[in-house]
Length: 249
Length: 289
Ligand SMILES: Nc1ncnc2c1ncn2[C@@H]1O[C@H](COP(=O)(O)OP(=O)(O)OP(=O)(O)O)[C@@H](O)[C@H]1O
Ligand SMILES: [Mg+2]
Image 1 (cartoon, rainbow over the protein chains, first blue to last red):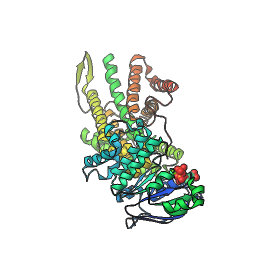
Image 2 (image 1 turned 60 degrees about the vertical axis):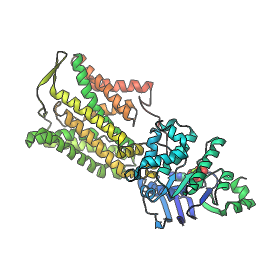
Image 3 (image 1 turned 135 degrees about the vertical axis):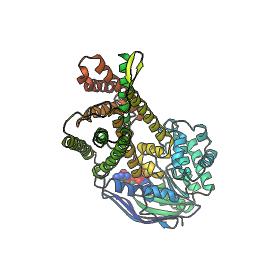
Image 4 (image 1 turned 90 degrees about the horizontal axis):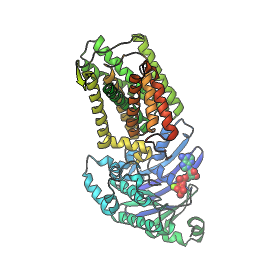
């Protein structure tokens, strides 16, 4: 098991955003996490990659500082529930955040370089760049463009490319298709499949259930901070109640 | 006169740029409004006075030592007076004001309110277009520009510079890139205080050293940062020269008018803000979380 999360609970100021969630990801698979708006999908990813713990630490003592974080997170055989966010990346657990969030004032190249921040000294970064350009040729063409001026689709490619520069073993991608036109969505999903075929394990958060279920092997359905269904995508699709209530199909 | 204004404006602009860029850096990276910034500039000036006049050390040695000691002091202040309350904006503001006042009182207690001076590093003068310009002024200008260029190089071309810029733009995503955001904030603080103390070292032979010498630069620096657009380094740079030149113009053109220099700077700032509320290079901040 590459990632094993057990009994994870997150409260922000007494609101329980994640309620006793357990999940796992096997090496090499693509797992999806779906659920309605506000279900806690992003919060779950943030808890796994250390951002909730970071909030807890930095906001301690302020009005928003009342944060509870409980549970065990094991990644690649090691407990990471006490590991700070910037160290978690080093282990190969990489989070491509919601709303893409490129460094808008930096160029495409600088954004990609910040993805390789941890590894700049050790590796030939140019070689890593070439790999990313092969996947996303558009980034290669726009290397010196300020990323705030990229289109939404290009920004998404950049966000994923930047995450790849950190050399993930497991890549968590949060809603890559949101706000994109149908054609671009399809392209983004295709790229994610290509990444999976490179041997990178993926956990994909999406609203676009139909597309995701056709790519992922297993899925978790999250609602109000709880996992209310899980299993093979094909089996989830057969459950009429889940289909209608949670998947909107 | 024109040459005087040009040289003086360039020196003032460069020194203000050093101060404003350092201030903007910590503001951007760690959201710290460090009112004590120019008090640290004053600290560096006093330390150089101590080194040269009281301990008889060579000026260069005193300057280097002063810069390092000031950075050390800045980091101690950051650690004990700022970091524990970093997320409480009002408390942090008050705390840095308190630190500035404390430094002022400490220097007043030790040295009294006397106007002290430091000998120039170099003597003699050059004649530029018929006007005498002291070598010390030219040296100050050259040093300031070299430091400004090095700072730009550091920020744009080094790995640490990349981390500083990334953290300033989005702390959380910087974390996700493996950047140790607290460490980056610490380094930024050191760079910022370093720039302030270098500014102090550069001007110390040209100004009088006294316990309130931090106030005028503070007003100018805040005006520059607002004028240029909060958090924008280009803005701080351009704003510094605009206000540096306008200050020299006032000082040289208006007889006995040097008491006007703060109000002119602030008027320019207000005028620009009326036309362009986000400042010259400001971007309207997008809330990110
Ligand atoms: N820092 C916070 N403080 C308090 N409440 C928060 C915080 N962050 C998120 N929430 C709340 O937690 C709930 C879950 O948010 P989250 O962003 O995880 O949902 P989501 O499943 O990702 O939704 P979406 O599909 O819209 O992205 C929401 O009700 C949100 O308002
Ligand atoms: Mg979300």
